[in-house]
Length: 279
Image 1 (cartoon, helix red, strand yellow):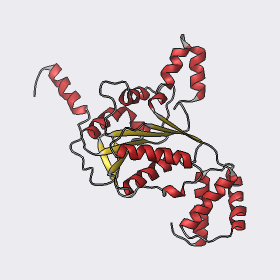
Image 2 (image 1 turned 180 degrees about the horizontal axis):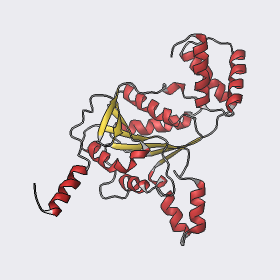
Image 3 (image 1 turned 180 degrees about the vertical axis):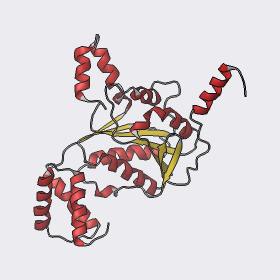
């Protein structure tokens, strides 16, 4: 053992540093989840998703994201996308459904999910993906940042602004309930308390500018809510009259105090169970 204190410190730091991920097998699955400590890409054998044609009421958004993803999978220019808006309206479901649709069209596109809690490791993940000849959609669900969270700066540099930037074979899709990925009161606080309010706000909201596509999701109407449920019933062969479906579905939404695609699916799950239909 060396007696040099500096050498001992250097050796300890080397042991603590994350080891680079060596040659992951991207042929093991179509989707992966990124984990840290240690860094690894865990293959997902069965992705939790619904078919693209079952996502009702978001036709224009669906077509835009599908076209962008197909361009990217074909080796053409494409934009990072931020899917923002009302909760439960199919933001993450759309990303996963579009990925499946693009693969079914013949493109070997991979989906990699990055947890918000692991955002500080995004640079290491990008280096792993950069070394592959595959094409990847990097997916971060429910992305948002608090006032004392500096991880957004790492993501900003990776997306646009750093020396390396985003790899050509990686596209980022993120979902959020917030258009600028940060609470409105946090932005307002910057305007009111900073020495230079305009610069402070620009620093906070500039991350969302890195996304070329902003796709908004809004609360659905009652007709759209009922159409979603009818679509699920037809797809899974659950028989129920329109009158019964309407009465039960409206009662269900009233007990939940909200109406969304997620509530529609939760009602349908209950209905299918009562009808003895496996999903």
